[in-house]
Length: 522
Image 1 (cartoon, rainbow, N blue to C red):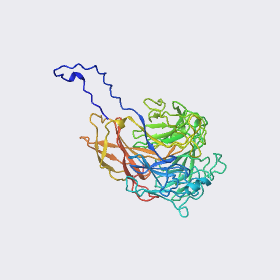
Image 2: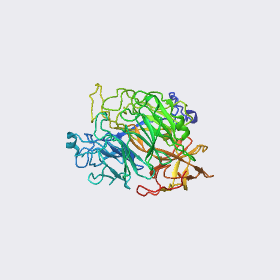
Image 3: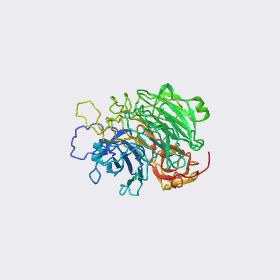
Image 4: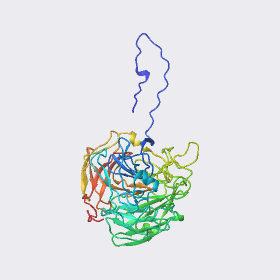
């Protein structure tokens, strides 16, 4: 809210004269800044989160004793979070989650949990969220049928990735839920719809990325490879430097840095693991692979950090702790600060300037994808005041960048479907006084957040030309479905330091996967 103040020197005093006490000088309006805003109560632990529409986010937890209830009075472990009303609505699920989105894999429910929830064994589960037209989520459901729709084998703590033909690649995990002693690993992956199987070593939440040539880059433990989905071959790459390990339970995190035309050269940034500030970066070209990983450092060590790609190309690193490892009640000192890294010349120091600190611990089972919820213990736990421990956390908050407090550009009449390698024109409004010398148009998959990793998160910058009257943009879509895997996405316009609201679009034909190549090759 803006307040307008009028100085006394601008007023005329009428007779009779009344002497007024001196007024304190008006405080200068505060400059726009990053700020945390607490939004509400999720009702379930936000163990897994994915944005499914401009107004809705799906949350999954394990089947336990969260406070949210379904219509029949059972404990809920799925919810729709409304981003406009900041309220949660229970989703009726069949099997116990704790896998990834579609969502895949999960838990064997504990006997006590079954009594409260009615949950079935979720380790082979596939949970499909059916989008609906209602902005409020009315009629939106999750489809499950364990008899006809399931994985090839049981999986717990597996990763998923949307690849070039629109299919879901399901990687790794473990057959039984154990305290992170991976004695019975699932040393393969599968596809949904099914494709093939391939062995892989350490694989609890491996970090996987779809490269712009259709291949897949993977990090498991401290090892990295490029896997060719079509040829079923792997190329072994250099290990992470200094013995860093970023997959669960030694959770660091990693992200594919923004891809830019015309070459869309892929780079991956991997940060954290127990008690280290190390960030490693590799360019996935022959020359970059020969050069290997380059090392930089965050301002402090982070265990279980999360990376969020921002529409302007910056990477926000947030959440986590400064001791321990990713497991039950193992982290004692939270890290509340966030820090941002801009993908510019490597070696430029990362910065925490202007970024706030939250007083809500975001630890094990936290998520960041426009919202957050954490569960730093094996079940919902409340610790008495004044006693040390690990309470479950249901508060939802946003971290608002400075431009949320400013006039922002807008996108108008964005087409619902964006073909590959096509020019299209959209209307724009740009706030008065904002320089148009720097304009970025980002096509983004917001990803699926769980266990310090955003599966499928992706930003591809698109070439854009602003009209002479500054009322329209002509945008060139990505050249093909390997640069940006087909499916739902968001388009953002950044002008200077301000970013628009994202426009929800379908990229590609919209056909069910697997689909043939679309567009033109690089």
